[in-house]
Length: 283
Image 1 (cartoon, rainbow, N blue to C red):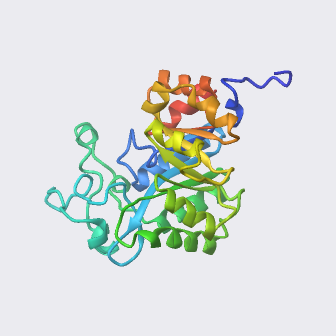
Image 2: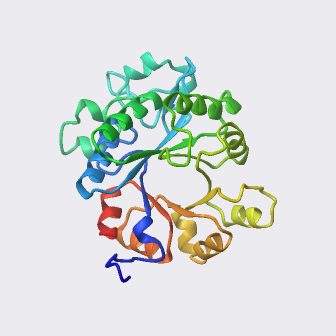
């Protein structure tokens, strides 16, 4: 380009970078340490970043940051045992008493995990972290994935919308994006916060075909988020999504070659467990 901007792929100067469950490669997912590390990576390179998280309800109706419906994969009690319980059956106080880092044997084998690598986070906690980073001059957003099906299924988007409204983070320039695999969830959020950016996720090409033929009706400005394996199998998808006037986002892309391929295809956003690798590819 004549202005000296280096272009990688179609839109790389504007590519959005999302840290999948925080920087969940080098740190246990969705802990404070994972989110802090993603913010630090963005600070180092002077680029915006989005912190991706999954949310659903605790027993006391608080939105917790946890991917799985059950805490057994990532939650450990004081003696290191798995906790076989659903997020919806545990209160925030009970969850704060668990260790959400010890399951990462690959990390624990090489070093002592910090307290921030064991901490359970609520969505409100994450919003506080984002607000502090913004006050410190780092451009940080959040991609909030609402999980479905879960208990109190239809209430999740309403609870997210209420928290965003409290912060005043409801518009297109808020740095907040709601993402979900659930079409009904997209519709609910579109009705609750009409100006909030939205992404419809899928990992099967049939879902895109349903969007194209109108079986799944999406507002024209809603982005498409496609799984990395699906994109590798169907690289033509990026052009098809762009031709439909939508942004094309890809998740979860971790290997440098895969990141470069996605950028060369012209994706508008990359979600990665290693956001520093995406920044390096964009440099």
